[in-house]
Length: 107
Image (cartoon, rainbow, N blue to C red; front, side):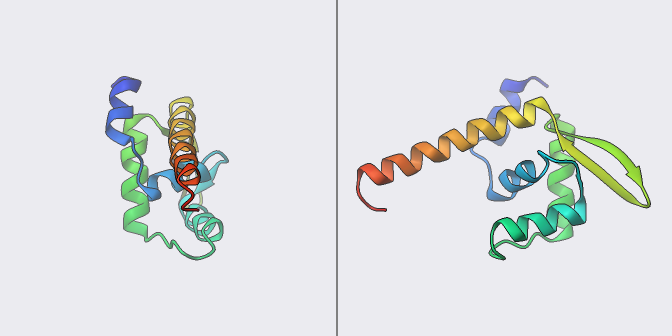
């Protein structure tokens, strides 16, 4: 799989995917990801285990994240260069949406 095909598959990103990649700019295990997403969204988003681990599996298979270690039944993940590039592209897309909304004076 190449990066262009990954971009076509993941962009635009779901909110879940965006927050998972954002959290994995630092190494974290699954439960820590769930806690950080809830913290970042002020409790608006609460990821279930099935949603999180399904997303992690797809991202790992696509090369957006990698497993860094496993200890005490916990698997730790971190974003890859592809993942960093993808989240940067999505953040720029979202900035453009906000800019257009500001131009139209709806914000």
